[in-house]
Length: 216
Image (cartoon, rainbow, N blue to C red):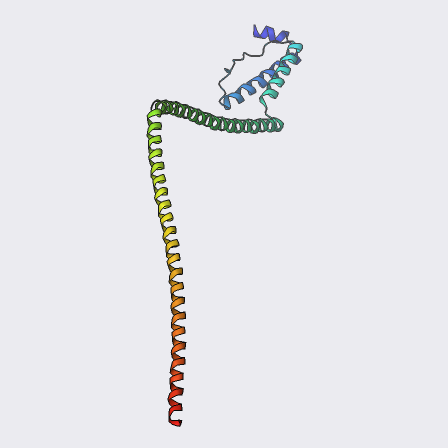
């Protein structure tokens, strides 16, 4: 039967079939060498009849497949650029995550501060209520203490005023006594001075009289 098929095929279609078969075998063998097990190695029979149109389509598909499997330098550059872009996006997301974590910490701290402040406000209100409850007693105690201190200060002021008044009186009396004593001293000095002058005159007169006596 194969002989019948081969005898009916033209030389061009026969050789084209062999060429396509070789290309496919080479492609699949290269895939096996790369340990690509995604596609099974097909089994090809001996030359099979194909029209020239089918051969052209198959060759075009093979060429397209080879182009798809070939990584050009442009593709490598694109892959590298995509890799760098992906790494940049990963770094950006990491920075955003760190920023969000810091913001979450700040928000948590603010929430804790708010709760602490609320607790302090409650404690302050409780303290104010307790203080208001006993305010009258405290106020009475403060007023009594204030009055006591005021009375003590007023008493001290009165004592100081009396002491100052007595001192002023004593100073006035001392001043009068001093003036009297000065007047007495003046009188005494004048008296002593007058007596001394008279005594000197008498002594002088007596001396003159005694001096004149022998002459007579």
